[in-house]
Length: 295
Ligand code: 8Y4
Image (cartoon, rainbow, N blue to C red; front, side):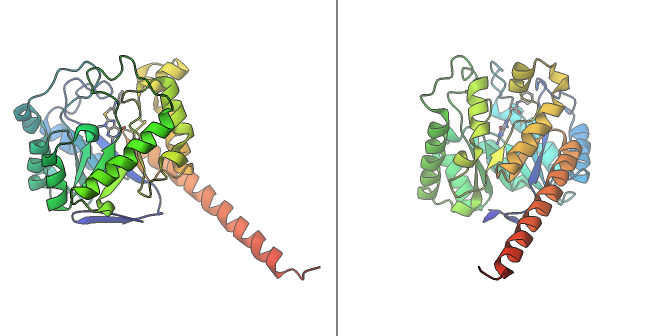
């Protein structure tokens, strides 16, 4: 399976692909606006790449529940200097986290090769045309409702079945809009219109969610369901986040959207080594068994 994103291409299976998060918002709860200046954001992106990120996801619009809407001009003012400053300095692919086709277009012109569209549910023809005509990669994420209201009363009859059906239906709509399947990865959208129980159900059923035939991306890093489950402070969510990352990879997730790249990279490499060893031992046992004279 391949994921093609403009000038980047990844072939799966391979060790999990890490997408490092660079927020350029004043109100993002985990980064607290630490990377608001373009120079700081650029420095942080270079650090994440050095730590093992192969994709840098740059976002200028907070999707935090209740967050004030950001104008197109403001979103561009936040993200464009960062993308321009990174273009040509990164081996990693640049991903633009936006729901606006105009922002996505400007970002792609400035050097982004992936559009991370958390608004896939409502993506208009402008967004789909941009992806189709440029050949950029596209992250198609599930969300119930819209960021301002999504956490008010999330409801599903069967969250796993509904998210799976949504992603399958969306893939068909993307194809109909002229987007090649190999440009697209899918994402259950942890925390986007989901209760703790919904998030856990999706994490437990990642193999079902990921059976669309496209690589699965997961964003669980530092999200509030970890605190809701474990009763830990927001700044203490790293261990819970690492458990989610390792679990997700074991369940077949190919791409992780994360804040803590160095720590996640270490956890994933450790898992990968043990998993490779197990597969090797199983293969050897099978060969031994097959070479036994049959009785
Ligand atoms: C602490 C840290 C509390 C982070 C909340 C958050 C996803 C995403 C986001 C995701 C994809 C977030 C842009 C929400 N989550 N894109 N974006 N998948 N593809 N919240 O799960 O990180 S923003």
